[in-house]
Image 1: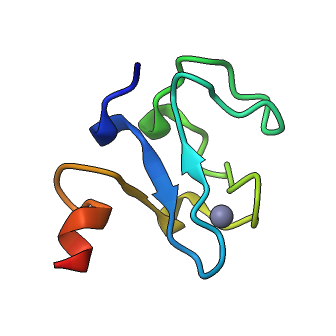
Image 2: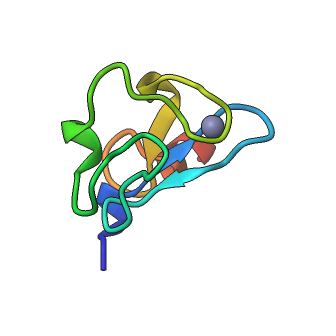
Image 3: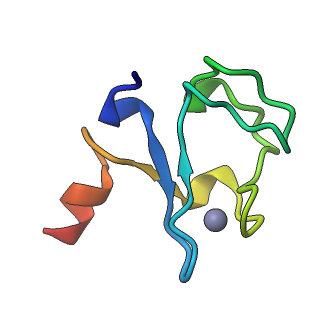
Length: 69
Ligand SMILES: [Zn+2]
């Protein structure tokens, strides 16, 4: 089970897709167990096509929770 720090959520409007390293990304040919940090910099959101920069971790520094404070 991935830690919240390792799970990243897409922050674009109407998306909210979560990248879970336990699942990887079948459409982007990312194998299970790949950490978000290890994704290719050209990887993009499988749902809306946003770049990696649009993603924020669910916990920890710079996380979604911190932004909402
Ligand atoms: Zn997205």
